[in-house]
Length: 143
Length: 143
DNA sequence: TAATATAGTTCAAAAGGTGAACTATTCATA
DNA sequence: TATGAATAGTTCACCTTTTGAACTATATTA
Image (cartoon, rainbow over all chains, first blue to last red):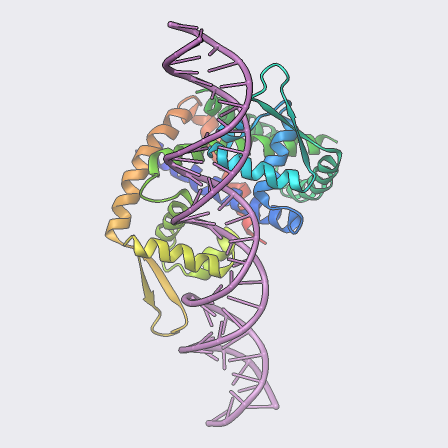
């Protein structure tokens, strides 16, 4: 079946890309923070009024794993917690100035490398590719 | 800068897709094996005469981490080791029949779901997308 | 108001990772 | 060809991350 072959090619190459990016991340970030911690920190930055439950859902891990993750970021002074005054069960997460500085500095290094890779593509190809990727992400999130 | 925005969109959506796929994998695989273990097992299947060092390089982890990973798969009877007769330092890894059955059964379930997502795309768009993805994977691996 | 649901935390145990030290083997060269 | 360097893989101690169950605190609803 042709579809099966497409899925297989897709899986194989997206895995390869993802692993390479991870290796780059490790290289650029490391010593201060782990790759997992950086992903979580970045997610908090990009999602205003984000909660532990949001992160657990997005990353597909249990809430207790998120608590541990959050604690590590908190201990490093990269995020802060703020309790909702109306519903005192929920705790919102925010990136601190120190966290923001750290992200910016790291992203600059990463973007330089990824940008170098993307420069092998025609502008039109990049646009089409990212468009398809975003469409796929959207479809997969709507469930 | 425009490039920075492209990289940001790329990063954000590829992460989202990857997390979703992970959640699906966890759902379909779990209880018998972890997602990490499945990735390693799959890699061994797809790369004939694969060694621990190959895996360490591909996944960007230390060789000691691979030894531990391999042990877990070996203990489950999913892979076997065979020493190279000409260079007795190297140990080749192979998926057993049990491992193969496990992979096939799991892939069938996963392909069904991913195929459903891909069906939202025109055949031409899928081809272009996968082509770009493979190109990116190739570029990133040549270093 | 009692029962139930939800948000987040704590805990013990397992998986996964690191880097250094080690064994066994092969390669290189003097 | 003997020996010193390089390579493949393992072991070890220690840290991080995840899991799932039990728990606390707060909100919802019947």
